[in-house]
Image (cartoon, rainbow, N blue to C red; front, top):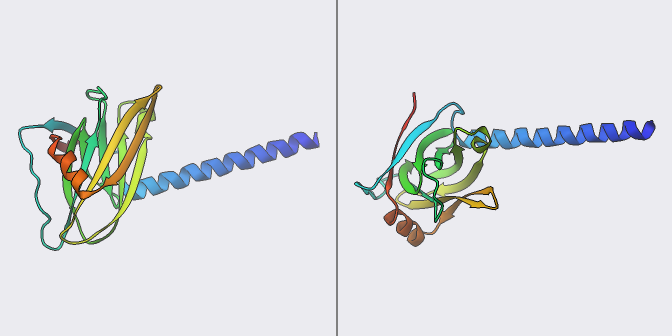
Length: 176
């Protein structure tokens, strides 16, 4: 009886620890992302391909979603947040860009889907922006043995320019 009580208490403590870790992870994700109830419509637009330079006093951030060989029409919409606000979205293989003030920034990538389990997929990155610089990040969603892998990583300038040049622009707007 005493052993059963000890095991029960141990399991309860372990469960509380896991819930606290889940809560801490969600809090970190939400501080980098934007409001949970904001969703986007996005589509690829190959008819335009802007690649501006950073404006004086700010940095430019490009986010490229690289679907590789995955054929996932309509299922790969990701929204990107910075420092607690959504800044845009990519659909399929596409890119978009936004400006950032100099300093440390926290980025969040969140899969937006009609399936609730996919909406729980987050990836994060941190970078320190310098005025006049361009920064490139690549997101990837891949399928391996019925498991989706979700990556969000900085890439070097040359790789970033190549990825942008070989991807259509993402045109997006927040749903009301």
